[in-house]
Image (tube, rainbow, N blue to C red; front, side, top):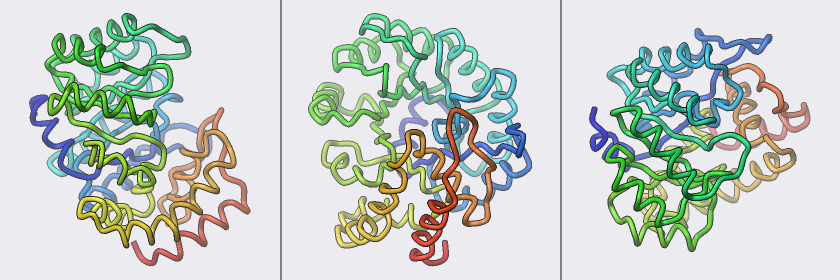
Length: 303
């Protein structure tokens, strides 16, 4: 698959980030990870991001990473493309990208570098170095300490033909409009704010109709139904699901920093696809919060 093929796929439908399975000791558990991918693949996501943000990339070691990507690629071969997470320090991000390419992933999502702030020149150098280290497609994640301007993206687009996607996790509307107006169809644009469904209709109006769904990990049917409602401008279905599920869901998620991942693992456990605990510094939901989430999920019916 060449970068332009990946760009077309990314622009064509719902995306998701499978959880990474850990056992009670916090070690990678490949058996249930395979079962998770086999369960999710038939629901119709156009691509899956292995070891992404919801997959706790930020907590993985360099030794663990290849096993996770290889498991995802082998399990989903011929079913759904796998895009690997990569990020952190530039040289580590390059090592992840090259390993993902070697293992047969179809591209990477380049997540922010670690800790330090940087100017636009440094961000450009970081993204360019990763893009030049591989041949497959790269999607840059605009989030946290990596916030790219329209000018920076224009420079990167000229220098890096395999930079084919822009995923936004910031939510600055003016910047998104400026980027889309400047870059047009040069990129595939992906919504990447936590619980992206809440922002989906607004982002579609800005030229970003595609997003990645975390809740696909435990309510895949509802996630697909909501995506289809956004695609068809079915506001009645969107408003019903926002009112009945997503806004109460956000009320639980917002109680603790890091719950954006923890609540997804909790949901998977509730529906019988336990991915194990989150790794520190994240913390799992409390028992009362688990009960509240279970009650919300129950209202949605069979998945």
